[in-house]
Length: 131
Image (cartoon, rainbow, N blue to C red; front, side, top):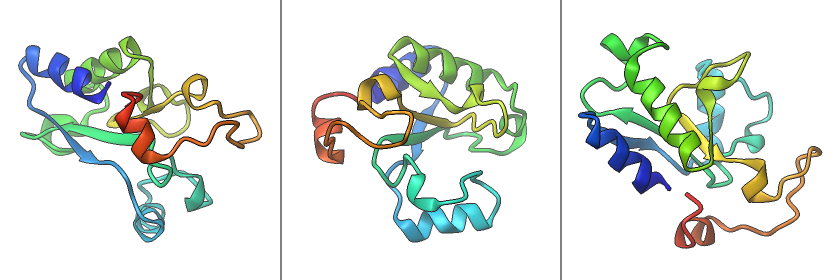
């Protein structure tokens, strides 16, 4: 799915790349300390679970025009993510994370209590094309 998204964005003239994927617990704690994550518990991060990525345009990163949450790249990213069934952080109400994509609860089998019904490993998620 990520490859499809990258291709769709490139077709529109963007230069997309995965900026971040799997994170360690320490890396996630740093994001929280920097105010770049709204999570209280770093273990709840989809990045730690291996089911999230951040995609940016390599020319801008989060700088210049990309610092605007309404920058067209972010809108195109969100549209492409939804087309392949991923959740886009740009639609979140309290903490808009426009570069963030993750597997939806429908795919992972996650219940509302946050417990996985299925044992998805990072390797299997990527091997079977969920991400």
